[in-house]
Image (cartoon, rainbow, N blue to C red; front, side):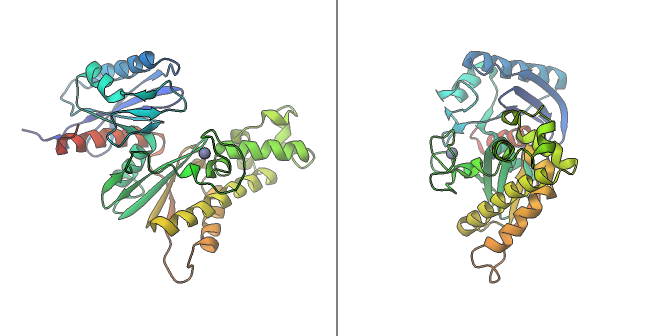
Length: 327
Ligand SMILES: [Zn+2]
């Protein structure tokens, strides 16, 4: 008889706009995919979308599956039974695991999408073999997860790894979490857009190339505009990316003081900009690492699994949960 380790699992990644799923083999490769739009306003409709993706994948696959792993942008309790809060979805203290178990009738792992991505990078990607891996997902905000001694760490209440809400600037920019000066307000796609709008408003001449992209309307500039401009060689856009990179490096240095990781994996949409962000980040890290010159620091690398990391990790985590009898 085959054990849970040998069977494919379904991984589901729930974002703000889509439910993406895949059948994931034990070696981390994806053999089939499916997706639906996320009807974010309705709890019931979101669960319908998840069930539809699972049904489609199960039918395409045809053979035995170990279970379903679900990663979602949200804060979960320690067991993964309850979504405490999800910024883009209607979940508030939602017993998601109970609801989905009823719907799907399959073994389940449910948890944070960045945790799932961190696990995928540890198992199959840039953090393989690490004793203490930290993942930072740079998207519109900052998410993250960590794997210590081969275990995904979710914290005492399930909400560990929310690096994006470390306060880096006293009384700084307002954050959606309710505080001011959070790291993700300075080192993220949103931060890039915010700074670009600020510069384009106060110094339109310096930002002429950026403003051309949005018909002169500074308030329309987004992080993506800056990224596109930087790739085309716009010096101001490159400077704005370097600024985000510098904030990133400073935050990594502060995290190194607490966790002493051997590897920091940078994932998420902003990470595709590569050295334009990571170069300045490594430079700052080198200058800001506490005890520099007398201790090793972490290696900072780009994630390897890209946008699929969340669903690949969620699938492997349900495989592990079934093996350990916790699914
Ligand atoms: Zn915050």
